[in-house]
Length: 120
Image 1 (spheres, rainbow, N blue to C red):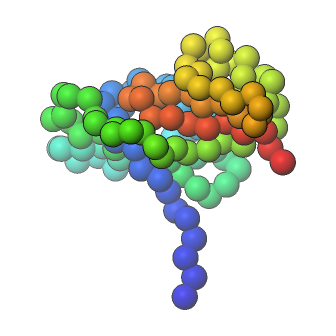
Image 2: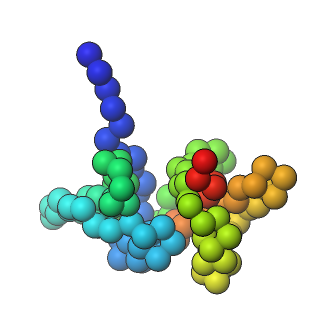
């Protein structure tokens, strides 16, 4: 028996705002979506791997999600770390930097932290 990663899920309050953020910040594009009367599942891909990010929008939800201590994150490796950092500075979404480790984090519209690391 073999398992492989398929996707990660993040619940979002504003689907269009979140989709636009992930497109601008990481170049993610819609791969597919499932719509019902109650929710929309939007799957985003990077065009390089089979891994997807599922954004779930519960249509009736009006309050922000409680992210607790927000001690979890997704990480993105980037081939041009300097250019990525400049983009995220312009977007004003960098929420934490660890220059000693050579990494930083950005915060999406719902407050989820996303790590940016240089490609090895």
